[in-house]
Image (tube, rainbow, N blue to C red; front, top):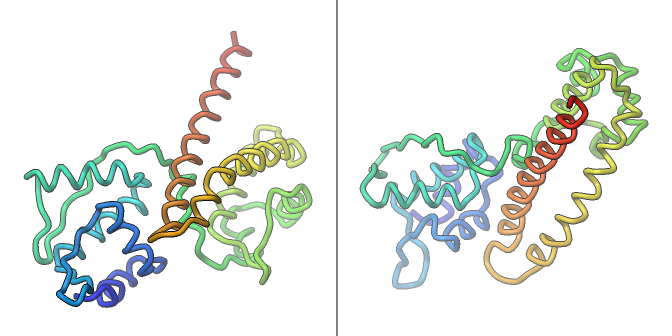
Length: 228
């Protein structure tokens, strides 16, 4: 199959997949299609299943490419395999990437009314989140799935007595962390070569996940000191 045919086969399950992404995964050694004498890539059914494995591991298990590569290496060494139409179960290996940092989960057009209905909050609560800079709709006035999770988390914190104005501290901290990540990722995204942007996005996912983990541990440590 040509790379375009592979793209067409994967796009129904992975709408965000691009030729650039496939080339990036090839450059990282996750798939190795054959080359025709003319130089064009030629993918087998097994290559396509391998790509499906990688994309599923990223989407459903939030695994970084390093962990996925280790799983694929284990498969290549005899612990399973990709056949024509065959499938391989994803292992339960823990990755460093948390669900909160799955950047592929932003799709969807959620209206304000739907956002309120799905989260169980009232319109005034959404307005307060927007006023405090915690929630921002897209250019067309719609929200996405990440906004739904954000409102759910804010509402849960509010049930413990934290008002939306108290949550601005989280926003300030997040902006600072994003600035640090951008300093590392932007030069890579602007670099030359195959998959520069995809490589930068993968780096952002892993750094953001580690940031979430570090933040959690610091909060736990501080709270433990308060309780003691």
